[in-house]
Image (cartoon, rainbow, N blue to C red; front, side, top):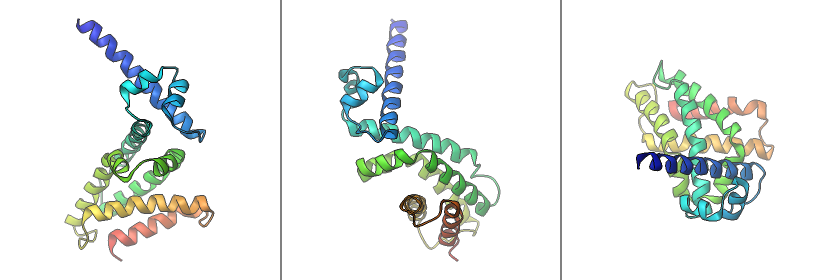
Length: 192
């Protein structure tokens, strides 16, 4: 019986991966993320998609969560718990900017199609990583402590996404973006 359950779990895992990969491909092609479209692109039935995700929004949220999870891994690899908090912040910003560049289509689709609550849920792990660093910096006096960590985290993410929007709109040169972003966040977090 356990062998049958393992086999079913393996098939289910493969189907979920195929569904999320298909949704990601649709997003990259700037095509609508619908249950029918995802099922067709994944090579599964609509019933299979519905078995794992009740709505197209749920598929999109899962795709965003997976992308943010990869970004979270990259943020963790930037070693935010090591070294002086200000240097760790610079590493996190650089990594965050690069990850957003890799997932730009996903960010656009998510902001257009997902409600704020879904965006918050999908970004929870990345927010926690930044919050830990900011808390550490507040405790040692490096970062401003007159504002709540949760607000500073929200501002950091808003500024990263806002910077990308400025580049996309042509109001900020791509080669200047990371420097401008870092200077802005540094001014906010350090309180200077």
